Length: 237
Image (cartoon, rainbow, N blue to C red; front, side, top):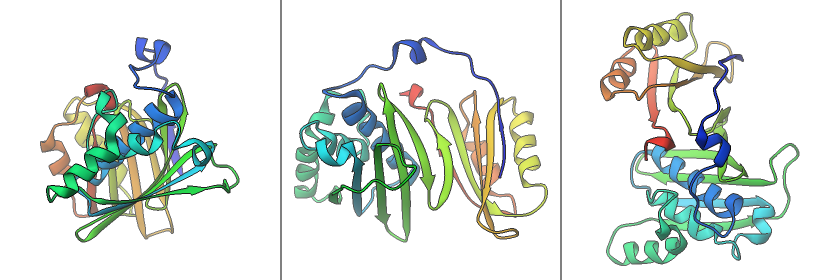
């Protein structure tokens, strides 16, 4: 894995933390952010979602409102919206009206070695596609996405990001970087992940500027690229 990370200046958001809906920053606000980012990554209305709470979340998710928070986020409700306290009721209403999605929530008492004690695993399924995601609520409402479809990543959601699934071949990272630079988009961090040499790979790029859809389309049309997911920053809410 090749990885380069640029130093980031602290913002007021980093020091004081985000506006949060309680009762718990880790078990409510952070979990809501995980659901919200997962929905953005999936891109469309899912048909079904399986949520697995690990570690302390497995023991406290009911009392701390983690179930409502994750459902609200998955419905596209922003993490700072007070409606996240009523996530499951809102989903029941949506299902009764012919929309929404089916959800299964499971408490997983055994935490795998090396996983954060506030870990959420999601399997999101829709028409002809599926997203598997693992993320952790790391405190103060902050989160980290740890795994996407079997690729190990480290995304906070605080910067615009591109996830480029491509054929593992020479030059892809350079071409994508050139497209961003030519459009005056500064790269803050990059990481490249692959399962086997010459097979499918994932390029993750975080940038300082919002990424226009035209740039996403340009990268999507590159011959070695299979798909591109644009993840807008949570700070753009």
